[in-house]
Length: 423
Image (cartoon, rainbow, N blue to C red; front, side, top):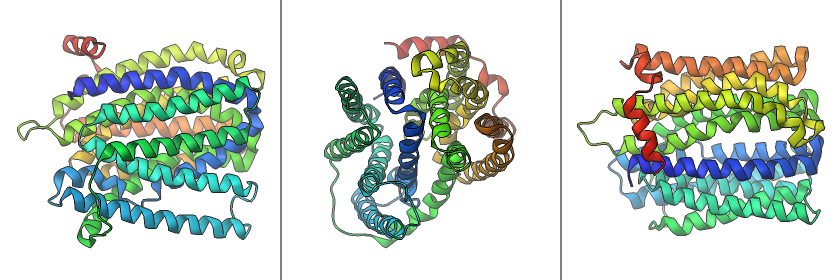
């Protein structure tokens, strides 16, 4: 499947997710209220974190070794799956011990903790299988499977709301079951051979490369979510509930760069030897940046609708979102251009800047939250996001040989490409 068609399908997928996601998000926010919204958002955040990073680097190395190493597919796939099974068992055991000892998640029932562990396991294996499909440029198949799970979740939320049965517990379990369906479908469609064996050379090679990518991705995730964890500790669940609504809406800008990221990653790993990918990256970046800038301008007046749509209880989310938007716009840049460094075997570029920005974000939150509450958290994040995007632009211009013009100024060919995406 062609690169532009993959991007086009990704964009269509993200548009559908935006449309239905906003509707169901409004229903959940109204049904739960700020306090319950923040309460359930926190446990989902914790197990999403564990699910996305409990692999310790295995998933981060999948695509690179699938395409750029001398190991057989069977050896890589089987080793990864078996290691992920062991990791899942180990993490489950640790969480159960901590919960039983009254050290961790004591405000949450055992049913929610068990559901969270199931959510974590689903995320681990879905992430692995998605990386595998990306390496083969099976982007559309990946999207189709994800949409099936998404529509199951959205439809179930709508039905529960109509029946008056949408609570934080039912919403949580619908989220878990949708992930489980996603895992089952992607496992069926993957169709990879499997043997119950772990090859140590494969494991060593993947950890050598993947540990750096894993750490940088973890730092990036915490960079985006450290403010929420700190708000929960400083200000409580109700304030976190309001803040998560603002974050969710502001981060709709990320849906375009995310749709670009997987397609660009797959294309960079499959370029012919005589193509260094510079023209591809430059064109992709300037088109995406221009669209994100336009969407940001539209979102500014749109933020005024938050109290009308989500209810007056979330009115404060408007000002929080307006503070976040400029930073989120600049944070779109790393999501678009980071595949350039990963595909060329230079994950340490991403590692350095994500760590610096995480530290900056946390330090600013420690200062700003006591002073200005959730607005202070938004300001801290926006400042660190701006620095995050600026660093990547400077790297591309000063070290990679790109000009600022070719990264941000669209041309006539770009407009023709946009027309092709709609076909």
